[in-house]
Image: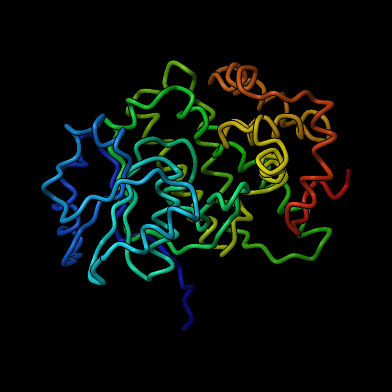
Length: 329
């Protein structure tokens, strides 16, 4: 018999005040390492000192996150081969640890301080090299631990950015179907189902829910399932389409106007639905954006008009060889 080889974490734990119990969680899953090293930012260590048990770690490495240059500095540290890395932070810290762990073939766990994007389980790390952000393929974490009480303290904008990143799966899935039909691409159909399910789970919620345990668990589970969809397809395809290309083009060509990734892809998705996709999704999506508060933060943070969007399209198409709705524009 043949089985699919999947990078599925051995540990997936979501709950209240569980970050202090990381040793118990690891041992419960029969995972043992000589050393456990925490990677985080000083500001986060200070803010969440009541949630993080420092004595659980053999070493703490403070980072800024997000750059290839810092990755080089970390590689000069004397670290054991028999070690487990714990990435505590947002996407920039997690992506840095993902990249280091993948380059050095060591295990890591993600412990997010917020849920602003799908970094906790995506097969991609976005790091800045020089003045430009680049995407790098990475292996999956062996564990994902989401402490609801930590996530509750996230600023609204970060939670809404996570919503934006996840809901944009609906745009990516449509692009995948276009690529299958018009470009003869092979994309895992079940991966697309998972990507769509993970996004659709957000629709019942409104802005008043975003700090509730139920919503945070839904968002966390959705981002993890979204990550699984990418692992199944072995590409970011199920969760990254034209909306991500637009966002990457903003980061590349207009860094002074660049903002939260999830807000950028949510904006791009809305314009794509309104202007270019000929279906009935725009009304439903617009209602959800209003209910959850995405429209408000898009107005606050996005410095582009619909007219500017048209000018972004050629730049977005050139970001990578990915067949999307942009190929028809």
